[in-house]
Length: 161
Image (cartoon, rainbow, N blue to C red; front, side, top):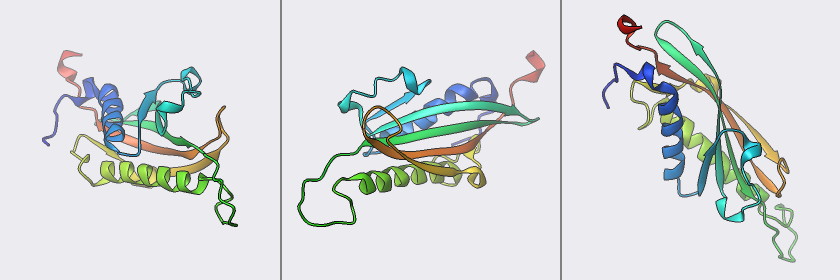
C-alpha cells in the first residue's frame, strides 16, 4: 500500500475500520462492536466470540496522531461434563483464554510489521499489554483486554486549515 497523504483528516474512522475489518477476518471472531460496552446486549449467545473496540484518547504531535486503543476479546465459557480429572477445571476457560490471546497477538503483530503495516497506521509494539479477565460481564465469559497505542500519520492539509 502507498502512503496516504491525507490520512490525518480521516484517521479516527480508518483506525476503527482497520481494526474491525481485521478482527472480522479472523475465523475465531463472530462479532465486532465499538463504543460503550454497557450498550451491547451481551446476553445474545450468537454474537460470541466477540471483539469490542474502545478508542480512548488521541495525542497529537507534529506529524502523527497516537490513539490509545483497547480491544476486548471474549467468548463464553462452557461447562465440560467429562468425569475424568483435568487441569482444565471442567470447562473450556483455558481454551477460550488461549484462543483470544492468539487473536490479539496476531492483530497487534499485523499492525506492527505484518500486512496491515502500510506506512499510514501502525501499532507501537512496546505499548502492547494484555490483561486476562473472567466473569467480568453478565455471562460467564473469559478473554483478554489488549491495550496498545496505534499511531497514524497526521498530515492533514494545513494549508486549508
